[in-house]
Image 1 (cartoon, rainbow, N blue to C red):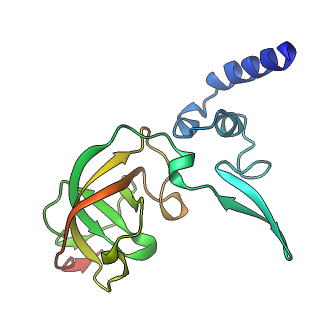
Image 2: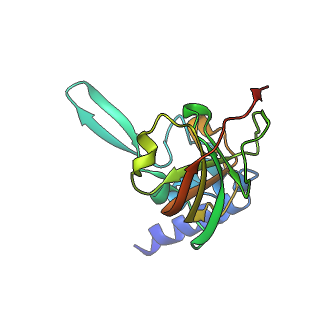
Length: 169
């Protein structure tokens, strides 16, 4: 037992010196952080996934953002949510849709802790106010990790539709 604990402490100490430390910072699990820092993530080990089996074989299933990443305490937030499927983005503190819709590598992904009635609407552009949590560290969030920041909306306080951007670039 003591040997295993010492080995784990040595491994985590070595990982702390890795140049991959900033990539590993968002993850809750020390195992996920160690896999990323040692370069095993993605081909030997899938961070934030669990293996499930069915009649067709094994598959890796994402455990969900709340279980995967570290978050700051809840706070009241507002902004514009551009619900465009894979290209969805939240614009914190914005009061209207942008005139020109551009893609930003520094963007923010928004997830809802529970299903909200407006989510099934055909409307895609929303002004939202909610109590939510920001991911503590920048990372690779949202569809294919295309957003640098993540917010989870725990309680929606108000929502109303806004006009779409005039054009995309």
